[in-house]
Image (cartoon, rainbow, N blue to C red; front, top):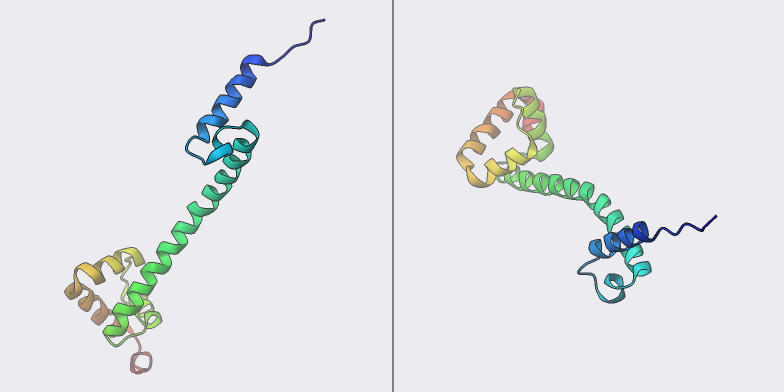
Length: 124
């Protein structure tokens, strides 16, 4: 029985790997073995960083909100507590955008948050 060689499938696999590694430096884009390792590692980084980007943006929004709240005499945690009490359901991204681009509206939101807090929490 003749030995089966996977000629077409192997060529397609090599072409796929080298196509994915296009633009990599040196042997990583030319040699199949190095390209395979580089593509696999790039995939791991891409998977990890798709989640990391979300985390970094959320922390950026919180930093912006903290600064905006401090300018208005309120801590971030008190602000979020007041928003929940006032029933304002804006997410941190939208709140940060409002704080930057529309300060008057953000002032009104802060006042509503302050008004909905208990008296003891607002005086700290």
